[in-house]
Image (cartoon, rainbow, N blue to C red; front, side, top):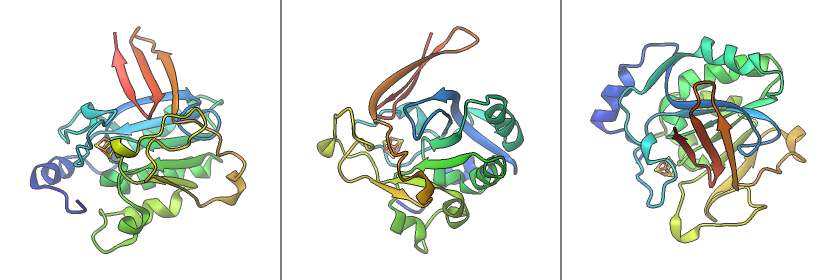
Length: 208
Ligand code: SF4
């Protein structure tokens, strides 16, 4: 799984430097990490986990290209955002650009968290996606491991969606902020009238 497929590889190579290919973005979220935060869902995942909450995030084809600078501006434009969470899709296939975004967000005092289908050990190994170490260095919190349907947790106080997943706290200052619940749901009404549903077992879903 750590080797990206040829098709995905080609799509990733088409993303210009300084850009991300994302599935969606929202801010003011309170179910995707500590406190109130922005969430970036990246486009592209190879795992096809049964029961995945976001199958629309699997294709690597271009969905929405956005510059790191534009995303940072959106995140900072909402003073309620105390951090940003990377979800997906698989954030680590776009690790170099996310590391850049994380570095800039942290320079403005925000904390940074990421979900990943990889384990931490895989991300630290020789077959990890390019830039994985660079992104790991910037993270305050990592939630690792794929979603495993047979190990699913449906509890209002669980930080993870399936029992194999782990929460790695890299920034001890956040030790009393591990209070989000993966089994809660949030509905955002966007400016164009679309509704974005997130938080229910990590789901990100757009409806009109
Ligand atoms: S790793 Fe996450 S986004 Fe990828 S298929 Fe599994 S649940 Fe879905």
